[in-house]
Length: 518
Image 1 (cartoon, rainbow, N blue to C red):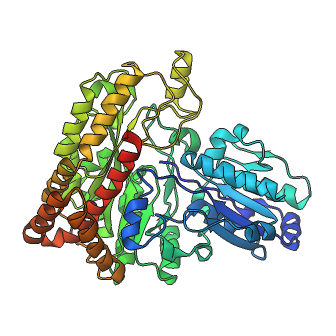
Image 2: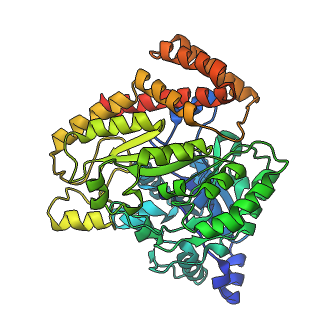
Image 3: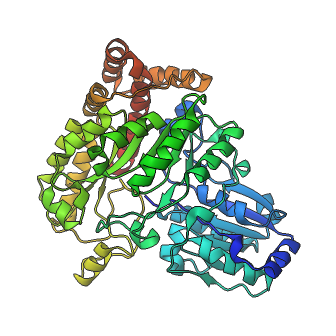
C-alpha cells in the first residue's frame, strides 16, 4: 500500500532563496480528497465510534511542516469536513495530494480551484503516476519531494516556477520533519499514521512500491520515531498509531536492535496505545521479532498472502511466500499476539476456476478475519503492466485503486466473466454472517496477545451499545452475533473488546461487498 507522501528539506535551499521565500506572504490551503466507500475506508464501522475518517493525511501535514514558518497554512480533509468558498477565497495556493482511489474527488477539487482562480500544486502517488491526465494543475511536485519540493520553492521565490518537478533518485528520509499535526482536528480520526521506512526489498510483479520508492529500505532513526510519538502524545493522542511502511521489517536488524527496544521503552507508563503496520510473511520465521513487536504494542499486521497457489506465487515473483505452510505461518503470528489482516488476489494466469474455493478454504482455516480479496490489476510502472502491454492484454493504463470493486485493467487468462462471477461468489461467501463469525472465532482461539486494551471511554461503551442494537437486534447476523458475544464472554473474556470490534468490522465489510456484488 502507498500512502500520499510529499516531503522536502530546506537544507537544499540556499540562504538567498530562503530569505526571499520567508519575505513572501502566502496562504497555503492543503486539501485532501475524499475516499469513496471502500474496503479500507471503514466508513460504516467508524460511525459506531462517532469518527469521521480513519487517518489524517500524513503527507500533506509533513509538507506543511516544510513550508516557511510565517506562511499561513490550513488543512481541509474532505473526509471530515467540506471545502468552502471562503477557504478558496483565502488561499493563494492549494496543495493537493492523494492516492489513485481518490482520483474522482481530486478532479472535482482541482476544477473548483480553477473556477475560483486558485493555483494548484499536486503531488503524491496519484499524480506521480497520472500527472498527464490532470491538465488543469499548475505545478506537479512528483516522486519524493525531499528532492523535488526545494527546486519548486526556489523557482517560486524567483518568480519562475515550472509545471513539472520530478526525480529518479531516492532521498535520505532521516531529514524528514515531524508532521504539523496541529493543522488536523485529531478528534475526528480513529488512527494516526507515522512512517519509519520507505522501499521494499522484494519485487512482486504486480506491486508499484519499488518503482515509486525503490528496493533498498530507507529508514528513519529510532530517535526520529520517538520525537514524532512525543509530539502526538503532547497533543493528547492516546489511540491507534499506524506505521504506514510497505514492509515494516524490510530492515529487520535495525527493527530488532534499535526501533522495537526504543518503542518498548517509550511505551512505559503510557497506557494501552496500539500500533499496527504492514509486513511480509517471513516475520513468522523469527520468534524474537514477533515477541518484540507484541511487547512494543503492535497488535495487528497486514500481510500480502496473495494466493495459496504455488504456481501463481511463482508467476508474480512472490518468493517470500513460496515453499512454506502459509496457514501455519499465519497462526504463528496470531499466537504471538498479532492479528493478521490479509491481502489476496485472484486472476493470475495460473489460476483455474478452482482458485475461488481454494481462497475461501484458506481464509476460513487461517482465521484471517479482515481478508481483502481483489482481482489482479496491473498498475503503471510494474513489471506486470509491461508484460500485459507486450502481450496485448492491457485494456487500460489506469486502475481504479479500489481493491474490492471487481475491476481489472487486464484481460485474464480464464476469461473476464468467469473471473468476475467466481470473484462475486468468493466475496459473498467469506463475508456472509455465518462464515464471517466462524472465522472470528477461529482467530480468537489462536490469538494470544500479551495485553488487551480495555476501552472504557464513552465512545467505546456507546459502540458496544450500538453493536447490540444494530447487529444483535436489527441485523441479519443476530444469531451469529449473540453466539460470538456469549462465547467470547465466557471462553475468552479478555478478548471481548476484540470480538465486538471484529463484529463491527464485519458490518462494514458486508455493506461494501453488497455495494459491489449487487
